[in-house]
Length: 224
Image (tube, rainbow, N blue to C red):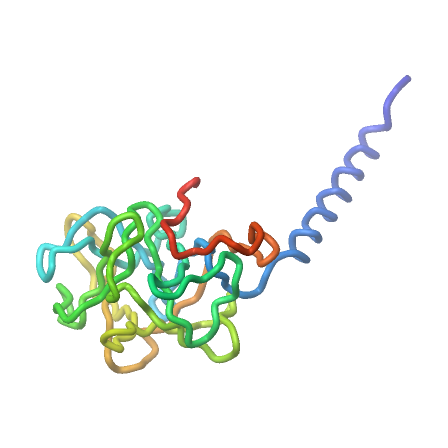
């Protein structure tokens, strides 16, 4: 016996696709949670926070952190984690005013700052530091946002907890070997250069917490 006509099969696939898209939209969370892996866009300069296994030739010689215009680069993924002294269970919404760590997924080093001068602008250097997600207290950043929790579509600031510098980009560009990438640094003065927004990523839902017992203070997963 013949199956349904091609037009009916095409209509069924279309209805199924619409239903799946509706389900995805309904289950997508609107806030950032611990354990999520995200790309962060500097709103003013349209560059994503980026790192790679290239060290600064000045300052403390740590792994460089830059801004890139490319959206697809896997070296722009960062894991949102609790601190060494205060864990943050996976799937827990990140509160405004909460202190977190941002761990570079591909190298396992944490977003870090200290009082060394940045290479191009002589602002406060921002680097990536540590091994397998463990560094020191200079890896901690406070999320500054306007409501109760960090919303995915909100422009937020990150204040370095130890020095109070704000994670910023002001447009300076590197030459070789990272030609065209922008300097990322910390600045004491708030301004339009220090706002960031989540873009691409994997956002862990509260319901995905396995028994509520795991936390995101350990090394990030790197399946992708």
